[in-house]
Length: 107
Image 1 (cartoon, rainbow, N blue to C red):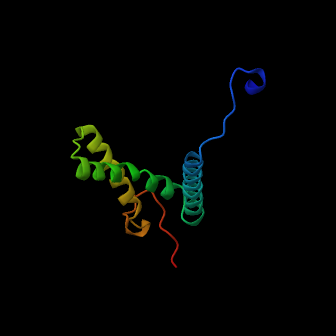
Image 2: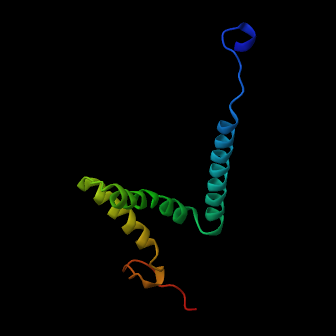
Image 3: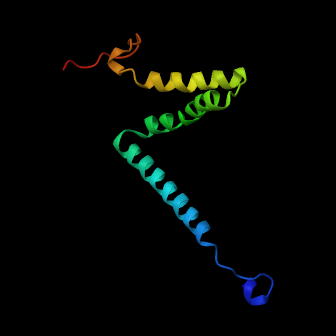
């Protein structure tokens, strides 16, 4: 519409820009497919908590590569995310039972 009215001219993108767009979109699609597969194979809760580990991993990489210093609140949040993920790894049978919970039926 803008080209027809003369307000803006239409130009095709250069080939290198098209290649970079295709690579970017392929990366996004493959990441989304991996995320969906993880949700289907494991569980939505585990997948969402595991995806939050991207921030602590990136922080550790930044600290080593770029000598980045982080404020205490960010460090505390990172420890909380990692602790939450590790707590999810503890099997339910290893946890103590609360007094008001019923005992599971014998196997």
